[in-house]
Image: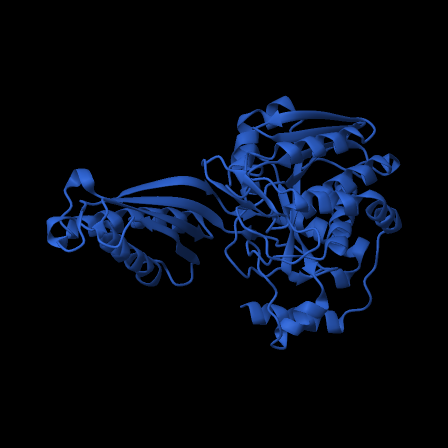
Length: 446
């Protein structure tokens, strides 16, 4: 899949004319040179874990308050920040950027690489890294807010800038909505966001007219065994052995129960048990991520995990009160772009950036996004989520030719090219807002 995507990208670029630029591109570049570059590098050096983004949130609040006319509220849904910029009568557009990092030790070799540790909401201290590009997103939001404030003659309506915590735990969007995002602040007619993509060339934008990201659920499995001496396994119930059977059997759900044309993934990302060579522990803990592209498959996979885990426990002679416990601790549904809105904004970006900048969307993994909560059916808010290229074309072509692979998101080696990523993210988001808020524009309900 990855090779096909790179080959397709090379073909598109080879056949395309030179990329265009919006009439405000020079102003975006000047802003990057003057302050956005330093802002990005500061964010990258000082990442913070989910729901612990106090420093980042404080900087974002200060930056948004510096935008003329912006009203800013902090501590929404924990560390979230909301900025509201009004400019007469018109639709309301929500622009969202996530700000949390990941518990990883950075090994990118960048001169501004992070070297910090932090204790997360789980009580575990770990190194922290921006290994998914959220530093690009928040830097670009500052650039977008500044640009739109300087161009008020070209739009009418209300902008709601949402600086969201805890996307990596798929909990921040839900927390902000629960804290009154859609009642304490103007409810949007449209919701917009973007993600920098390491597998997409700088200068390129891509958005689906349907599903953009898969669902994701974090499933915790606790296997309660009976402790014993390692030399006398028959006197206990070994949770490591039982857990290993569960790990193997979970893949049978994917290969033998899931419909082959309906995507799904079950990955055991962590398996913790025991303390010494010759001790059979009395507990094992498994951490599982589950992905799907529709709610029916999502529910089927989660139910099957519970059935399989309990069944293996029974097969190993565990009593009912000691069967493996299965709990969904975090989750988000699929992120689906509103088709009419996506077609409208894809066309607007093609006009503003040039058709050569628009890459047909291809889902190359089952990544997930809690942006889905902002556009959930019960809110009636159409959403548009797009990808912005973050890796130089030369690096992608080298990887395609057998050279060094491009590090993926969530890798300690992850890095993107910040200037073209931040600038294009700013330009594309600004163009999308100008399309939706151009004078005389109607709301989604009109």
